[in-house]
Image (cartoon, rainbow, N blue to C red; front, side, top):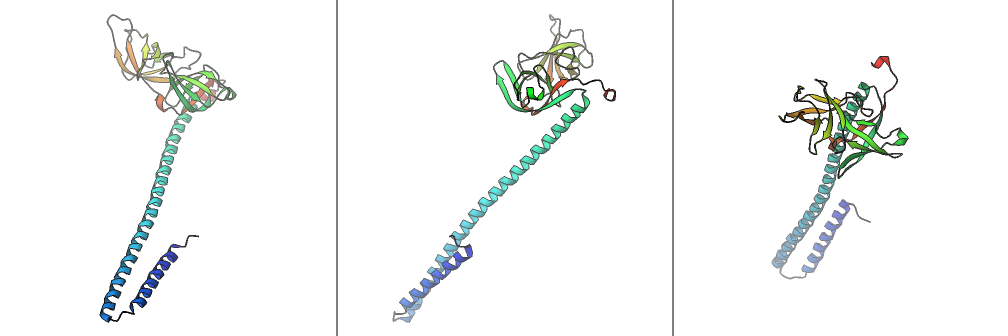
Length: 269
């Protein structure tokens, strides 16, 4: 059994004292008192030095143990701080999602993103909801920022969502100001493309692009992004419009799957 620290210190001190007394008794047999005093002094200094070294070692060990304890405490505090920061950010996201749910007259299924896929030609998210949660193929998926994509496959407990930054994704869209329609596709880079908008239509940089409603999948008015640049080729009939997505697809964590529109409710018109 390990002795308490103070008992260990007492035992070491008593051992050194006993050693000093024993050597003193041996040296008492010497006949020369001056030599005896000199030897005793040297022995006392040696014992003091040994004792100080032992104390320094004990202090170093205690310091090392305390340092490890402080490191662990510092790690625990940083971890708790990070957890708190994550909780605050999650709370902000959920508040935005709740505001979206209150604004849109649809029934939603709340879901968490539990996986991502970026296989060649197909980019998707995996959700923790499926057929048992009333999720079905071709349901639109949104978050607080805008349109995420649509459900393309469903199991009992999970579903796969094709996101807008996928080569096979196409959405009927509308410019919010001019009300002109076009279709959204992925450019293969960081932006989307709004296609089939005639050169005669006035389009402004910064103008919002939303779903047109000309689809059985996507309800009208869901934000897709904003116009970031407009190019015109004199030999083309349509403008080349780049759209910055409203959704950061690399940071999607919570989404809503839009099930259907509820019965008319005058209080929500």
